Length: 30
Length: 224
Image (cartoon, chains in turn purple, green):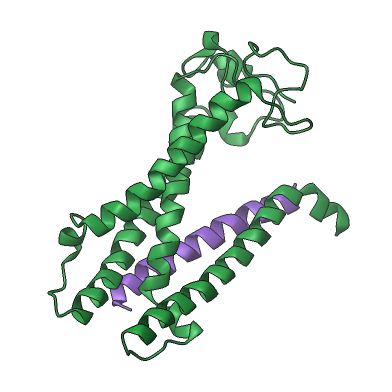
């Protein structure tokens, strides 16, 4: 199950990164 | 490695086509912006500048939020609403949050149950709702991201046309924000409703999203 957990965490990381980039760039007025 | 890839094929394949589509969206979006700038006599923008702009991210977030709203609503609605004959629904007799026995919690946990299912109290309550909570949080954050990035993109357009920029609360009341939001929502709701009702009479052999080919149309909640 270690590999399944890794894919699970990868998805959460990609989603969190996308949300963070969008919000931060927007707040910076880019 | 082959075994790992095969075991995770569904999530890896969708992750890969997500990245591919996102990259192509960036390319097409850059060309679209440059086409408009060419027509209005402005300077063109590089790919790097485009993907680090709110123009790009407002479009990304706008589509994300609607997808996560769709799944959040669907997970939550299927607890309480059923569709006779649909593979996407549970049996009408099981409407609601179901018994501890059906949900394998309380005295019905098994040796292999997740630790937080066995723990009881707030941990089990949190695990019991974690899918809706996480999907719902992603929906709210991507909708927030759409509004923040969308406002920057909207204001750039305003300034280009010698109009006054708007504040974030003002942007939330603009037709631009709601048009971007609702055009995505309507398609998600139609697609979900279609999945629910089309799966009553139509089949895809081998897919767990479908009933078995020979299952009766009236049978609810079977797996193919």
